[in-house]
Length: 452
Image (cartoon, rainbow, N blue to C red; front, top):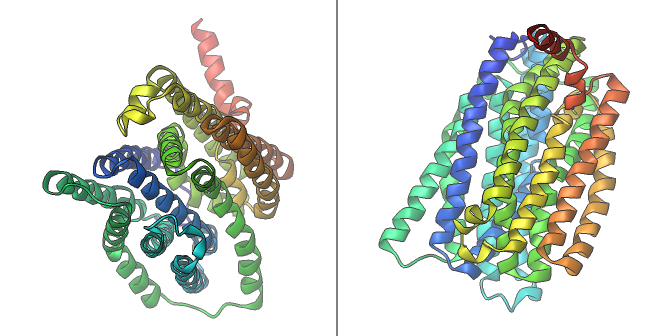
Protein backbone atom coordinates (compact mmCIF):
# COMPACT_ATOMS: atom_id res chain seq x y z
CA UNK A 1 0.00 0.00 0.00
CA UNK A 2 1.48 3.35 -1.03
CA UNK A 3 1.65 6.39 1.19
CA UNK A 4 -1.25 8.06 -0.52
CA UNK A 5 -3.83 5.26 -0.28
CA UNK A 6 -6.59 5.40 2.29
CA UNK A 7 -6.16 2.81 5.01
CA UNK A 8 -9.22 0.86 6.21
CA UNK A 9 -10.03 1.59 9.85
CA UNK A 10 -8.80 -1.87 10.85
CA UNK A 11 -5.43 -1.24 9.23
CA UNK A 12 -5.22 2.23 10.70
CA UNK A 13 -6.12 0.85 14.12
CA UNK A 14 -3.48 -1.86 13.75
CA UNK A 15 -0.83 0.67 12.74
CA UNK A 16 -1.96 3.00 15.50
CA UNK A 17 -1.71 0.16 18.03
CA UNK A 18 1.74 -0.80 16.77
CA UNK A 19 3.04 2.76 16.91
CA UNK A 20 1.33 3.16 20.26
CA UNK A 21 3.33 0.19 21.55
CA UNK A 22 6.50 1.77 20.17
CA UNK A 23 5.66 5.08 21.83
CA UNK A 24 4.82 3.26 25.07
CA UNK A 25 8.18 1.52 24.95
CA UNK A 26 9.83 4.82 23.99
CA UNK A 27 8.24 6.62 26.95
CA UNK A 28 9.35 3.88 29.31
CA UNK A 29 12.85 3.91 27.86
CA UNK A 30 13.00 7.71 28.06
CA UNK A 31 12.05 7.44 31.71
CA UNK A 32 14.79 4.87 32.26
CA UNK A 33 17.27 6.92 30.22
CA UNK A 34 16.99 9.89 32.54
CA UNK A 35 16.96 7.62 35.58
CA UNK A 36 20.22 6.11 34.32
CA UNK A 37 21.64 9.59 33.70
CA UNK A 38 20.68 10.63 37.22
CA UNK A 39 22.44 7.53 38.58
CA UNK A 40 25.81 8.53 37.09
CA UNK A 41 25.62 12.27 37.85
CA UNK A 42 25.16 14.24 41.04
CA UNK A 43 22.21 16.59 41.54
CA UNK A 44 24.00 19.63 40.10
CA UNK A 45 25.40 17.78 37.10
CA UNK A 46 22.00 16.22 36.35
CA UNK A 47 20.48 19.71 36.49
CA UNK A 48 23.07 20.93 33.98
CA UNK A 49 22.52 17.83 31.81
CA UNK A 50 18.74 18.34 31.77
CA UNK A 51 19.26 22.01 30.95
CA UNK A 52 21.58 21.09 28.07
CA UNK A 53 19.08 18.51 26.81
CA UNK A 54 16.26 21.04 27.02
CA UNK A 55 18.37 23.63 25.21
CA UNK A 56 19.34 21.21 22.45
CA UNK A 57 15.71 20.14 22.04
CA UNK A 58 14.58 23.77 21.89
CA UNK A 59 17.12 24.60 19.19
CA UNK A 60 16.33 21.46 17.20
CA UNK A 61 12.60 22.30 17.05
CA UNK A 62 13.35 25.54 15.22
CA UNK A 63 16.46 24.36 13.36
CA UNK A 64 14.60 21.92 11.09
CA UNK A 65 12.53 24.81 9.73
CA UNK A 66 9.28 22.85 9.89
CA UNK A 67 10.48 20.48 7.17
CA UNK A 68 9.57 17.35 9.13
CA UNK A 69 5.93 18.49 9.02
CA UNK A 70 6.22 19.71 5.43
CA UNK A 71 7.15 16.23 4.16
CA UNK A 72 4.27 14.76 6.17
CA UNK A 73 1.99 17.20 4.37
CA UNK A 74 3.32 17.10 0.80
CA UNK A 75 4.54 13.54 0.22
CA UNK A 76 1.14 11.88 0.85
CA UNK A 77 -0.62 14.67 -1.05
CA UNK A 78 1.42 14.27 -4.26
CA UNK A 79 2.38 10.59 -4.03
CA UNK A 80 -1.27 9.79 -3.39
CA UNK A 81 -2.16 11.21 -6.79
CA UNK A 82 0.68 9.31 -8.45
CA UNK A 83 2.97 12.33 -8.89
CA UNK A 84 6.12 10.79 -7.41
CA UNK A 85 8.40 13.20 -9.28
CA UNK A 86 6.89 16.26 -7.60
CA UNK A 87 6.73 14.52 -4.22
CA UNK A 88 10.41 13.57 -4.45
CA UNK A 89 11.38 17.02 -5.67
CA UNK A 90 9.72 18.55 -2.61
CA UNK A 91 11.44 15.99 -0.37
CA UNK A 92 14.86 16.85 -1.83
CA UNK A 93 14.14 20.53 -1.22
CA UNK A 94 13.13 19.74 2.37
CA UNK A 95 16.38 17.81 2.95
CA UNK A 96 18.47 20.77 1.81
CA UNK A 97 16.58 23.21 3.99
CA UNK A 98 16.78 20.91 7.00
CA UNK A 99 20.53 20.41 6.73
CA UNK A 100 21.08 24.14 6.28
CA UNK A 101 18.92 24.95 9.28
CA UNK A 102 20.47 22.49 11.70
CA UNK A 103 24.05 23.25 10.66
CA UNK A 104 23.58 27.01 11.10
CA UNK A 105 21.71 26.55 14.39
CA UNK A 106 24.35 24.18 15.78
CA UNK A 107 27.12 26.62 14.89
CA UNK A 108 25.26 29.39 16.72
CA UNK A 109 24.92 27.21 19.82
CA UNK A 110 28.64 26.43 19.67
CA UNK A 111 29.38 30.14 19.32
CA UNK A 112 27.48 30.74 22.57
CA UNK A 113 30.49 29.22 24.32
CA UNK A 114 32.22 32.57 23.76
CA UNK A 115 29.61 34.55 25.68
CA UNK A 116 31.02 36.14 28.86
CA UNK A 117 27.76 36.05 30.84
CA UNK A 118 28.11 32.55 32.30
CA UNK A 119 31.65 32.56 33.63
CA UNK A 120 30.38 31.44 37.03
CA UNK A 121 29.50 28.12 35.36
CA UNK A 122 32.89 26.51 34.65
CA UNK A 123 31.35 23.91 32.33
CA UNK A 124 29.68 26.53 30.11
CA UNK A 125 31.99 26.44 27.06
CA UNK A 126 32.26 22.64 26.92
CA UNK A 127 28.54 22.25 27.56
CA UNK A 128 27.73 24.57 24.64
CA UNK A 129 29.82 22.47 22.25
CA UNK A 130 28.20 19.24 23.39
CA UNK A 131 24.75 20.82 23.20
CA UNK A 132 25.42 21.96 19.63
CA UNK A 133 26.15 18.40 18.52
CA UNK A 134 23.09 17.08 20.37
CA UNK A 135 20.90 19.74 18.74
CA UNK A 136 22.12 18.63 15.31
CA UNK A 137 21.47 14.98 16.13
CA UNK A 138 17.98 15.61 17.54
CA UNK A 139 16.98 17.78 14.58
CA UNK A 140 18.22 15.44 11.89
CA UNK A 141 16.78 12.33 13.57
CA UNK A 142 13.36 14.00 13.80
CA UNK A 143 13.39 14.87 10.11
CA UNK A 144 14.50 11.43 8.92
CA UNK A 145 11.86 9.74 11.08
CA UNK A 146 9.09 11.94 9.67
CA UNK A 147 10.30 11.55 6.08
CA UNK A 148 10.06 7.77 6.37
CA UNK A 149 6.73 7.96 8.20
CA UNK A 150 5.34 10.09 5.36
CA UNK A 151 6.03 7.09 3.12
CA UNK A 152 4.26 4.84 5.67
CA UNK A 153 7.57 3.27 6.71
CA UNK A 154 6.43 3.42 10.33
CA UNK A 155 8.83 1.01 11.99
CA UNK A 156 11.85 2.12 10.00
CA UNK A 157 11.01 5.70 10.90
CA UNK A 158 10.33 5.23 14.59
CA UNK A 159 12.56 2.43 15.87
CA UNK A 160 16.07 3.95 15.51
CA UNK A 161 15.40 7.04 17.61
CA UNK A 162 12.52 5.93 19.82
CA UNK A 163 13.88 2.51 20.76
CA UNK A 164 17.43 1.73 19.62
CA UNK A 165 19.03 5.00 20.71
CA UNK A 166 17.43 4.90 24.13
CA UNK A 167 18.36 1.28 24.75
CA UNK A 168 21.98 1.86 23.72
CA UNK A 169 22.21 5.04 25.83
CA UNK A 170 20.78 3.30 28.89
CA UNK A 171 23.27 0.45 28.45
CA UNK A 172 26.11 2.96 28.19
CA UNK A 173 25.06 4.74 31.39
CA UNK A 174 24.69 1.43 33.23
CA UNK A 175 28.18 0.42 32.08
CA UNK A 176 29.51 3.70 33.43
CA UNK A 177 27.69 3.03 36.69
CA UNK A 178 29.41 -0.34 37.00
CA UNK A 179 32.92 0.55 35.86
CA UNK A 180 33.40 4.28 36.53
CA UNK A 181 32.69 6.66 39.42
CA UNK A 182 30.36 8.80 37.29
CA UNK A 183 30.29 11.37 34.51
CA UNK A 184 29.83 15.09 34.19
CA UNK A 185 26.95 16.79 32.39
CA UNK A 186 29.28 17.54 29.47
CA UNK A 187 30.32 13.91 29.09
CA UNK A 188 26.73 12.66 29.37
CA UNK A 189 25.61 15.10 26.67
CA UNK A 190 28.42 14.11 24.30
CA UNK A 191 27.64 10.44 24.86
CA UNK A 192 23.95 10.56 23.93
CA UNK A 193 24.61 12.90 20.99
CA UNK A 194 27.17 10.60 19.37
CA UNK A 195 25.05 7.51 20.01
CA UNK A 196 22.03 9.17 18.38
CA UNK A 197 23.99 10.05 15.25
CA UNK A 198 25.19 6.46 14.97
CA UNK A 199 21.68 5.05 15.49
CA UNK A 200 20.11 7.13 12.71
CA UNK A 201 22.95 6.56 10.24
CA UNK A 202 21.09 3.69 8.49
CA UNK A 203 17.98 5.90 8.17
CA UNK A 204 20.11 8.63 6.66
CA UNK A 205 21.64 6.29 4.09
CA UNK A 206 18.24 4.88 3.05
CA UNK A 207 16.59 8.29 2.82
CA UNK A 208 19.36 9.89 0.75
CA UNK A 209 19.69 6.80 -1.48
CA UNK A 210 15.95 6.63 -2.24
CA UNK A 211 15.72 10.37 -2.84
CA UNK A 212 18.53 10.14 -5.35
CA UNK A 213 17.13 7.08 -7.14
CA UNK A 214 13.47 8.10 -7.48
CA UNK A 215 12.42 10.41 -10.33
CA UNK A 216 12.59 14.05 -9.38
CA UNK A 217 10.79 16.53 -11.56
CA UNK A 218 11.43 20.29 -11.51
CA UNK A 219 9.08 22.18 -9.26
CA UNK A 220 6.80 24.67 -10.93
CA UNK A 221 6.11 28.16 -9.65
CA UNK A 222 2.88 27.01 -8.02
CA UNK A 223 4.56 24.15 -6.12
CA UNK A 224 7.38 26.42 -4.95
CA UNK A 225 4.95 29.10 -3.79
CA UNK A 226 2.81 26.56 -1.92
CA UNK A 227 5.88 24.94 -0.37
CA UNK A 228 7.19 28.29 0.85
CA UNK A 229 3.84 29.43 2.22
CA UNK A 230 3.17 26.16 4.02
CA UNK A 231 6.73 25.91 5.35
CA UNK A 232 6.57 29.32 7.01
CA UNK A 233 3.38 28.35 8.80
CA UNK A 234 4.54 24.86 9.76
CA UNK A 235 7.86 26.16 11.03
CA UNK A 236 6.17 28.04 13.81
CA UNK A 237 3.35 25.64 14.63
CA UNK A 238 5.61 22.60 14.92
CA UNK A 239 8.31 24.37 16.93
CA UNK A 240 6.34 26.41 19.45
CA UNK A 241 4.36 23.74 21.39
CA UNK A 242 7.32 21.47 22.26
CA UNK A 243 9.60 24.48 22.65
CA UNK A 244 7.45 25.89 25.46
CA UNK A 245 8.23 23.01 27.82
CA UNK A 246 11.95 23.21 27.05
CA UNK A 247 11.92 27.00 27.37
CA UNK A 248 10.22 26.65 30.74
CA UNK A 249 13.00 24.34 31.93
CA UNK A 250 15.59 26.88 30.82
CA UNK A 251 13.56 29.64 32.47
CA UNK A 252 13.52 27.79 35.78
CA UNK A 253 17.25 27.12 35.46
CA UNK A 254 17.86 30.84 35.00
CA UNK A 255 15.52 31.92 37.80
CA UNK A 256 15.88 29.16 40.38
CA UNK A 257 19.10 27.31 39.49
CA UNK A 258 20.01 23.96 37.88
CA UNK A 259 18.73 21.83 40.80
CA UNK A 260 15.17 23.20 40.48
CA UNK A 261 15.41 22.94 36.69
CA UNK A 262 16.34 19.28 37.01
CA UNK A 263 13.33 18.63 39.25
CA UNK A 264 10.91 20.35 36.86
CA UNK A 265 12.50 18.57 33.91
CA UNK A 266 11.81 15.23 35.61
CA UNK A 267 8.19 16.19 36.35
CA UNK A 268 7.67 17.26 32.74
CA UNK A 269 9.14 13.99 31.43
CA UNK A 270 6.91 11.94 33.71
CA UNK A 271 3.88 13.99 32.62
CA UNK A 272 4.52 13.03 29.00
CA UNK A 273 3.38 9.53 29.84
CA UNK A 274 -0.14 11.03 29.92
CA UNK A 275 -0.03 12.06 26.25
CA UNK A 276 1.50 8.78 25.15
CA UNK A 277 -1.56 7.29 23.42
CA UNK A 278 -2.29 10.48 21.47
CA UNK A 279 1.31 10.84 20.31
CA UNK A 280 1.55 7.17 19.39
CA UNK A 281 -1.59 7.15 17.25
CA UNK A 282 -0.53 10.41 15.61
CA UNK A 283 2.48 8.63 14.09
CA UNK A 284 0.16 6.48 11.95
CA UNK A 285 -2.57 9.11 11.61
CA UNK A 286 -0.66 11.94 9.91
CA UNK A 287 -0.41 10.58 6.35
CA UNK A 288 -4.06 9.49 6.48
CA UNK A 289 -5.33 12.91 7.55
CA UNK A 290 -3.37 14.62 4.78
CA UNK A 291 -4.34 12.19 2.01
CA UNK A 292 -8.02 11.82 3.03
CA UNK A 293 -8.63 15.54 3.56
CA UNK A 294 -7.15 16.52 0.21
CA UNK A 295 -9.35 13.90 -1.46
CA UNK A 296 -12.39 15.54 0.13
CA UNK A 297 -13.11 12.68 2.55
CA UNK A 298 -13.89 14.86 5.56
CA UNK A 299 -16.22 12.34 7.17
CA UNK A 300 -13.37 9.84 7.30
CA UNK A 301 -11.04 12.45 8.82
CA UNK A 302 -13.67 13.33 11.45
CA UNK A 303 -14.06 9.68 12.35
CA UNK A 304 -10.38 8.89 12.82
CA UNK A 305 -9.56 12.07 14.77
CA UNK A 306 -12.58 11.53 17.04
CA UNK A 307 -11.53 7.97 17.84
CA UNK A 308 -7.99 9.21 18.47
CA UNK A 309 -9.26 11.83 20.92
CA UNK A 310 -11.14 9.24 22.96
CA UNK A 311 -8.14 6.90 23.14
CA UNK A 312 -5.78 9.72 24.14
CA UNK A 313 -8.13 11.13 26.76
CA UNK A 314 -8.69 7.71 28.36
CA UNK A 315 -4.97 7.13 28.90
CA UNK A 316 -4.38 10.70 30.12
CA UNK A 317 -7.16 10.28 32.71
CA UNK A 318 -5.69 6.98 33.90
CA UNK A 319 -2.21 8.50 34.18
CA UNK A 320 -3.54 11.47 36.15
CA UNK A 321 -4.92 9.04 38.73
CA UNK A 322 -1.50 7.35 38.86
CA UNK A 323 0.21 10.73 39.36
CA UNK A 324 -2.13 11.60 42.23
CA UNK A 325 -1.66 8.27 44.00
CA UNK A 326 1.98 7.46 43.26
CA UNK A 327 3.58 10.72 42.13
CA UNK A 328 6.17 10.99 44.88
CA UNK A 329 7.51 7.43 44.57
CA UNK A 330 7.79 7.93 40.80
CA UNK A 331 9.78 11.15 41.25
CA UNK A 332 11.98 9.46 43.86
CA UNK A 333 13.18 6.98 41.22
CA UNK A 334 15.23 9.81 39.71
CA UNK A 335 16.42 11.33 42.98
CA UNK A 336 14.96 11.28 46.48
CA UNK A 337 15.43 15.07 46.55
CA UNK A 338 12.65 15.34 43.93
CA UNK A 339 10.09 13.40 46.00
CA UNK A 340 8.63 16.45 47.73
CA UNK A 341 5.10 17.71 48.15
CA UNK A 342 5.95 20.67 45.94
CA UNK A 343 7.13 18.58 43.00
CA UNK A 344 4.26 16.13 43.47
CA UNK A 345 1.82 19.04 43.17
CA UNK A 346 3.69 20.29 40.10
CA UNK A 347 3.39 16.85 38.49
CA UNK A 348 -0.37 16.69 39.14
CA UNK A 349 -0.84 20.19 37.71
CA UNK A 350 1.07 19.23 34.57
CA UNK A 351 -1.11 16.11 34.34
CA UNK A 352 -4.26 18.24 34.46
CA UNK A 353 -2.95 20.34 31.58
CA UNK A 354 -2.23 17.16 29.61
CA UNK A 355 -5.76 15.89 30.33
CA UNK A 356 -7.32 19.00 28.79
CA UNK A 357 -4.90 18.83 25.86
CA UNK A 358 -5.71 15.20 25.06
CA UNK A 359 -9.44 15.91 25.36
CA UNK A 360 -8.96 18.28 22.42
CA UNK A 361 -7.59 15.39 20.35
CA UNK A 362 -4.98 15.67 17.56
CA UNK A 363 -5.72 19.37 17.11
CA UNK A 364 -2.21 20.47 16.20
CA UNK A 365 -1.76 17.66 13.67
CA UNK A 366 -5.16 18.25 12.07
CA UNK A 367 -4.55 21.96 11.64
CA UNK A 368 -1.06 21.41 10.20
CA UNK A 369 -2.27 18.98 7.54
CA UNK A 370 -5.53 20.64 6.48
CA UNK A 371 -4.27 24.09 5.54
CA UNK A 372 -4.89 25.79 8.89
CA UNK A 373 -1.23 26.20 9.78
CA UNK A 374 -1.46 30.01 9.66
CA UNK A 375 -4.37 30.07 12.11
CA UNK A 376 -2.49 27.63 14.34
CA UNK A 377 0.65 29.74 14.13
CA UNK A 378 -1.19 32.90 15.17
CA UNK A 379 -2.83 31.08 18.06
CA UNK A 380 0.46 29.64 19.24
CA UNK A 381 2.31 32.95 18.99
CA UNK A 382 -0.25 34.78 21.12
CA UNK A 383 -0.96 32.03 23.65
CA UNK A 384 2.65 30.90 24.08
CA UNK A 385 4.01 34.44 24.39
CA UNK A 386 1.49 35.24 27.09
CA UNK A 387 2.02 31.80 28.61
CA UNK A 388 5.78 32.17 28.84
CA UNK A 389 5.40 35.58 30.49
CA UNK A 390 2.88 34.11 32.91
CA UNK A 391 5.21 31.18 33.60
CA UNK A 392 8.05 33.58 34.46
CA UNK A 393 5.82 35.60 36.78
CA UNK A 394 4.39 32.50 38.45
CA UNK A 395 7.88 30.99 38.83
CA UNK A 396 9.15 34.07 40.63
CA UNK A 397 6.08 34.12 42.86
CA UNK A 398 5.42 30.44 43.55
CA UNK A 399 8.53 28.52 42.46
CA UNK A 400 8.17 25.17 40.63
CA UNK A 401 4.42 25.04 41.28
CA UNK A 402 4.08 28.37 39.51
CA UNK A 403 6.10 27.05 36.59
CA UNK A 404 3.83 24.02 36.33
CA UNK A 405 0.72 26.23 36.41
CA UNK A 406 2.06 28.37 33.59
CA UNK A 407 3.03 25.38 31.45
CA UNK A 408 -0.21 23.46 32.03
CA UNK A 409 -2.40 26.51 31.50
CA UNK A 410 -0.69 27.40 28.25
CA UNK A 411 -1.11 23.87 26.90
CA UNK A 412 -4.79 23.75 27.83
CA UNK A 413 -5.67 27.19 26.43
CA UNK A 414 -4.09 26.77 23.00
CA UNK A 415 -5.52 23.26 22.55
CA UNK A 416 -9.06 24.46 23.33
CA UNK A 417 -8.73 27.45 20.99
CA UNK A 418 -7.21 25.25 18.26
CA UNK A 419 -10.00 22.67 18.45
CA UNK A 420 -12.65 25.41 18.29
CA UNK A 421 -10.92 27.02 15.29
CA UNK A 422 -10.72 23.71 13.43
CA UNK A 423 -14.40 23.01 13.99
CA UNK A 424 -15.39 26.51 12.86
CA UNK A 425 -13.14 26.71 9.79
CA UNK A 426 -13.33 23.25 8.21
CA UNK A 427 -16.21 21.58 10.06
CA UNK A 428 -14.00 18.90 11.67
CA UNK A 429 -13.97 18.68 15.47
CA UNK A 430 -10.81 16.83 16.60
CA UNK A 431 -11.85 16.78 20.27
CA UNK A 432 -13.81 14.19 22.23
CA UNK A 433 -16.91 16.33 21.56
CA UNK A 434 -16.49 15.51 17.88
CA UNK A 435 -16.52 11.82 18.68
CA UNK A 436 -19.53 12.08 21.02
CA UNK A 437 -21.59 13.60 18.20
CA UNK A 438 -20.36 11.10 15.59
CA UNK A 439 -22.14 8.07 14.19
CA UNK A 440 -19.78 5.77 16.10
CA UNK A 441 -20.79 7.25 19.45
CA UNK A 442 -24.47 7.18 18.50
CA UNK A 443 -24.14 3.49 17.58
CA UNK A 444 -22.39 2.71 20.88
CA UNK A 445 -25.09 4.50 22.86
CA UNK A 446 -27.79 2.59 20.95
CA UNK A 447 -26.11 -0.73 21.73
CA UNK A 448 -25.77 0.14 25.42
CA UNK A 449 -29.37 1.30 25.56
CA UNK A 450 -30.53 -1.92 23.93
CA UNK A 451 -28.64 -4.03 26.47
CA UNK A 452 -30.16 -2.10 29.35
